Length: 155
Image 1 (tube, rainbow, N blue to C red):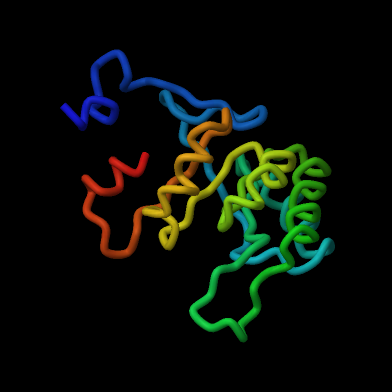
Image 2: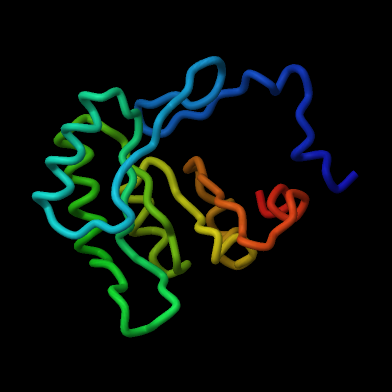
């Protein structure tokens, strides 16, 4: 019974989700592309324009970068999010970025059409509950050692 929310039913098999102006699901494949980390306005704008030309439907980029080492590049944060959003607007693409901290959720929702939960946060249930209250579609990455059932339960 606890799997009832994630079991596919015939009427659900062609469901769709809207992220900005992009419809995901049904019979159409939507490509999501972009860099691991947003590094500059020039990088994002040039990439966004090329991706739009090649048929990509959603622009992705990491504004916050959780790393194993606290001394590694952690991303541009708010500045990176604003660069990503502006590049998406300039290219006519909705954007998705990872939410790594519940305190940044409102800010990310202002700029992104879709929220991403990275594999490190797949079982961060405080973050998942708050994201679940939003009306944004969610790209949920599977945790590195998570079972399929654990991944589905996180959804």
